Amino acid sequence: MKALTLVEAKHSSGIVHCCFIDMPAGSKEHVVLTADQDGLVNKTTFSKGGIVGFFGKVSQNTQILVNGTKSGRVLAVSALRNGGTPHPILDLGLVAMSTEDRDKVTALGPHTCIAKLLPEPGIVRQAPCPAGVREGTVPYLTWLPPAPGEGGKASDPHLAIAWGHTLQIVNVSLPDGPTPTPVFSQLALLTTTWSFCGIQYLTRY
Image 1 (cartoon, rainbow, N blue to C red):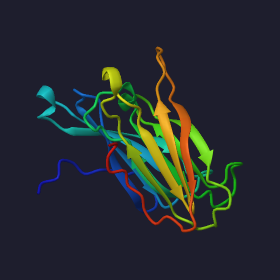
Image 2 (image 1 turned 180 degrees about the horizontal axis):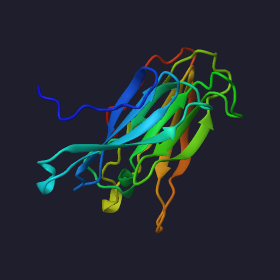
Image 3 (image 1 turned 60 degrees about the vertical axis):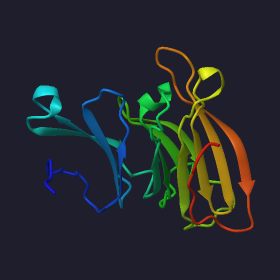
Image 4 (image 1 turned 90 degrees about the horizontal axis):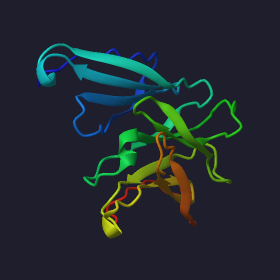
């Protein structure tokens, strides 16, 4: 297997999370999210020069999404994938991240944030972990992508956040407008007698 390019990761500590971000149809770029042990989260964009992107040198551009000084180590990462149903929210490249905030330097403490990577990176939501979660508890994240809905309109994606004994389901919608911002609404909150040790959406139906 031949490598397309050698990547300068721009991390000073070990990378603990790495995932591709789905790009809009027709894009000739590829975006990778990386997070290291110190909480630094980078967005790296790859593009190829030449005719229709098949020839030429692969170039890369790295932008800092989270510097890690306040958020602490990233414990879980999940990117919203394209399930095959068009939805304008897919053009934002949403990714959810749960962090430990080990130095207690933010008012939120351990929390889950949702970032958009496209066209430019930025944090669009931050929410603290549920009350009563013990220190050191590992969170889990999974997305349910848009699917065909009634009247031909695609359904909104859902994000499931499992942290300790609590499972939260969040709907993410995108209102109309020239520069829309995602709107988050809680669909369900479940508390169990046992701690979650994994979570994965399988299907909407």
